[in-house]
Length: 334
Image (tube, rainbow, N blue to C red):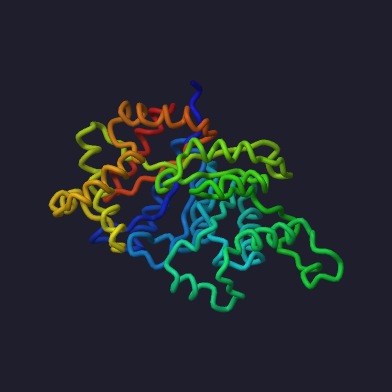
């Protein structure tokens, strides 16, 4: 089978003993490497109030990354639309698109990317509804962009500046059957979060394609599969690095959002049988090993989902090991 494009999803992970500031600089470093290696795109996440994740302001990071790279597409994975006024999103991404034409992506998420109190703090000056108002906000974003508000509507003359620049291509992020169908219905490209979804990836991709309605931005469906990979020179080394992933998943299940532990700290942790069951369950969604081992896991997944692109996240402790993981993966895909 022909190899599909390879991309990166970066949450700017904070490791124990390092700082959020260092994590953000490491993201710039990894993005420069990805640009040189020929990855297709580099997306940064939006999370709030999570000590293990430094990426809270994707639009700022996108500008910084695009400025330091030459070829790679840079985007949000994603902007969490419940947190933002649609006009604000339109303006920020038009500014980015004006500065870096043809290189910016606007990935939109339906969740707030945080806990309820933080979500409220982010939105307290907006009209907050308890309902899921993603669709309402998305429609407003599209109406602003397409000048779709009727004459007499208060927003009829509102333009997102610079008005001579189109919004970047829109991708809807999701991890459920609802988001898969919605992405199809609104004619967006779709990025499925296989790395944390409980819904099966192949079924999500099928629902997306079955429901797809062509739109001005996308004439046909385009599906990105987001997945977690830990690749190293040997299976043994990859297994050691992935211990960090195991402890992170156990802690998150207990509501402990701590910085990423070293493999040594993770190895010394006293896991209960329930912890070990959770680790085993999560490991089914993580591809861990040497390039050959990892490809043995990824190829059937790509085949089953018919993904148009693979977007990889690697949440491990050591920055050099993370860079090496992406290097090895790119070589395997080439």
